[in-house]
Amino acid sequence: MDVSRRPLEVSMTEQPVSPDRFDDLGKILVIIPTYNEADNIGMIVTRLREAVPEAHVLVTDDNSPDGTGAIADDMAAHDDHIHVLHRQGKEGLSAAYLASFRWGLDQGYDVLVEHDADGSHQPEQLPRLLEALRGADMVKGSRWVPGGSVVNWPKSREVLSRGGGLWTRLMLGMPIKDVTGGFNAFRASTLRAILGDLDSKGYGIQRDLTWATHQRGMKIVEVPIEFKERERGNSKLGKDVFVEAIMSTTKMGLAHRGQQLRSALRPGRSGQDSGKGQ
Ligand SMILES: Nc1nc2c(ncn2[C@@H]2O[C@H](COP(=O)(O)OP(=O)(O)OP(=O)(O)O)[C@@H](O)[C@H]2O)c(=O)[nH]1
Ligand SMILES: [Mg+2]
Image 1 (tube, rainbow, N blue to C red):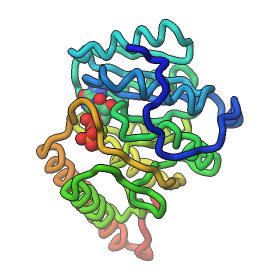
Image 2: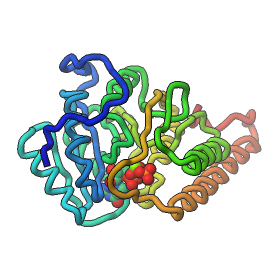
Image 3: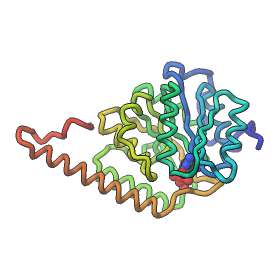
Image 4: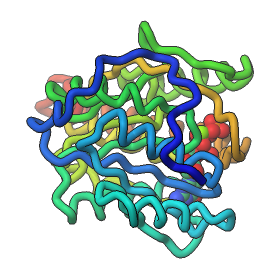
């Protein structure tokens, strides 16, 4: 694969690249978890390297049968800003992200970014997340704030995503519009504070990261992004993932509401929350 190909389509025009614009943020690592993304990985890494040349990229591959890991190795051999974390087998997105965060923190990165391989996230929009991180602990790329959008999504997918988001907001009382979005930037200090709270099973990692950050009273900013349905390769999400997410959100919400109630009823308390969260 010719990894030096330019993107076929870049839908948003950003400021021309001036090198090292984000020096003040420290060392930046963009994490791309992959499972069978051989058709996508070259293009997405190339676009990221062009969009923010000072950022490093970590491809975290779960031993993809289609050879994604070998393609990533080849890119890493030619570019010292590209790294590959090989994992033994498919363990899900949460486990891949937790291992990647630990790797990035151990290597001394100051900013860690989550980014899909499948073309849903636009690397050219990374600068706007990084700009917002100057005034935040976590920045979420958001489909559902003014200026955000989804492209080529079936209506059914949008209804599920918006419905799931609404349910999460209702259950957890968190003022975030796009809880499940997977294009997010963190300060290392944020991840260090919350990593111990996170569960490596399942697909709920985006919700859990957002919730843990919110509960610690840290600042979350949403910036609009354009989200595109993947064009190549297969989704790893099924109906079971959605059902599991709704169930676990409901469980978390009930635990949270119960804690609020106990806190309000405790003698000597004025009905305020326990001090965690905003
Ligand atoms: N390392 C690793 N990466 C994974 C795993 N599951 C999914 N991914 C990657 O995580 C990213 C998001 O996965 P997708 O299948 O696109 O899931 P999604 O974006 O939530 O779902 P779609 O909207 O259907 O695309 C992609 O880059 C996948 O290759 C996994 O078990 N391990
Ligand atoms: Mg996807």
